[in-house]
Image (tube, rainbow, N blue to C red; front, side, top):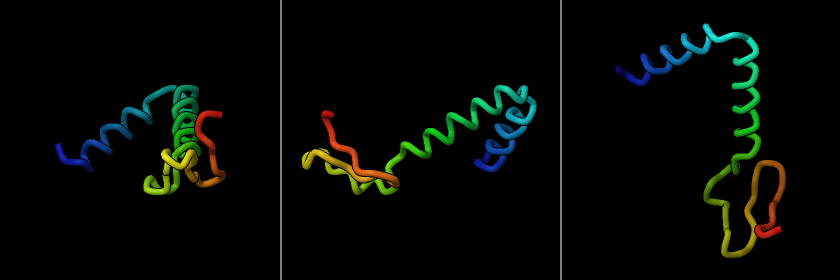
Length: 61
């Protein structure tokens, strides 16, 4: 199965889910994207902070 076939199969399964479950999945994806650092290489844990799309977080707080 190619990557495109896999994506189409997942999309087909998704489309057949009840709308309430689709909404929950969309919320989880949105939260995941919001909490993902914009660029992985901007994480500097040894300095005690890393940059995300929206803010700088300090570790250990």
